[in-house]
Image 1 (cartoon, each protein chain N blue to C red):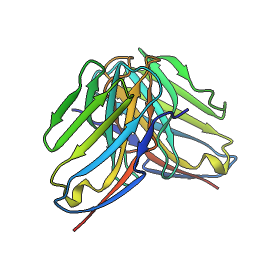
Image 2 (cartoon, one colour):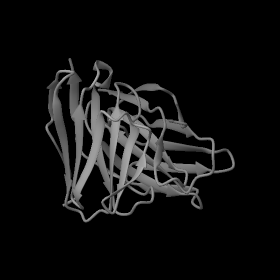
Image 3 (cartoon, each protein chain N blue to C red):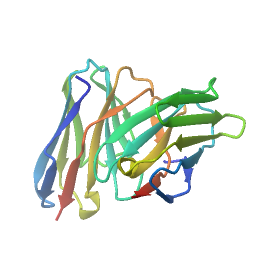
Image 4 (cartoon, rainbow over the protein chains, first blue to last red):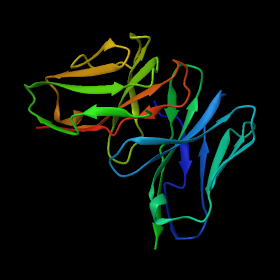
Length: 110
Length: 113
């Protein structure tokens, strides 16, 4: 079953603005990952943050993890039209599998 | 080569047909996965293979039958499917069997008539 919850479910912003999406989970984790999915295609891994890390950067992406609140956020800075996609968080809860959140649909308007 | 390939891209089948989906990776990964994804929903795990052995079956109906002929290849055999099985079927692989970074294929869009 999918246990992660993402907020918001949908987000629409202007090109150049920053986009922030959040993920909450319910059990302890080994790591948390973010994936991007363009419409009807496979998922692309963006970033992995381990449970002992609090923040990680990759290009225009910034991920934070707060294990005490069981939550993570993904910030995309200086958004581009090509960032339009669905974004999923996924948690490793120790059962040799990832549990995906419900996803945030991000639309970047030109 | 960091690519996972899936064939076919699209598949339309009747409820009495037998068909197979194919997935291939040449990254030397030891774990491979099948997911099912409905529109606007997250991927749902179906099966996990670790070192060519089935390690996780998420209570998937027997009309879906996975097979891992070798470390690079993963098949999903389909038989007597229902219209509600129509979905995007995604294959993924990871270096080890623990839940680390997964590399996804582009998926097979399956329609069951």
